[in-house]
Image (cartoon, rainbow, N blue to C red; front, side, top):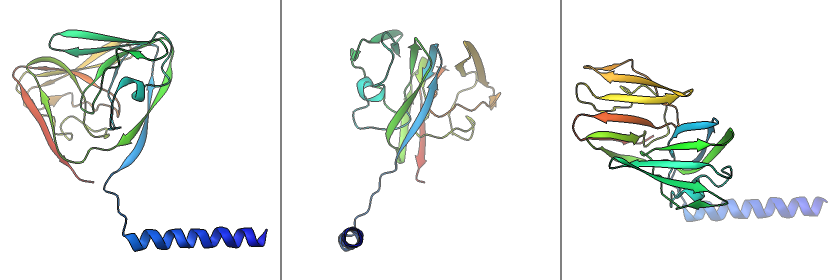
Length: 197
């Protein structure tokens, strides 16, 4: 038993020395986020970049018959989970979808936090967007740009809650991590920020 413990300690010391000798550093911030989904419709965002960001990797434990509705260019694209997502759409950080769940569950997102200079284009009209970084804060503190009269709509508890930009966001609500929202923009704008934690 003592020999086994000494061998383990020696192996750990050798591994630590090898890592220090190689000067291995990681610039990535890797993590996970648990996002609870209610039965029925949920506005969901992907808070982390997992490399592919496809539905099969983002929602592998979806309920049979769950449906995702992705909105783009004035129309919805639909994907259903029948053992796997078909079609297998992508959901990048900064975007969002309507997720129709047959039963409540918690989805775990795993991946890298986006850092550096980030730009999220927001088209004129309606779009579903989210923060590109996993932070919950007010729209003002998240530096969400707006033109006078732009409106944000959250879908919470089966109903819409809105915030309008009238020189400042009123009320200045905070999206949760992993929550997307509708943005009604009078003209196209870009949500640009630098995130270097």
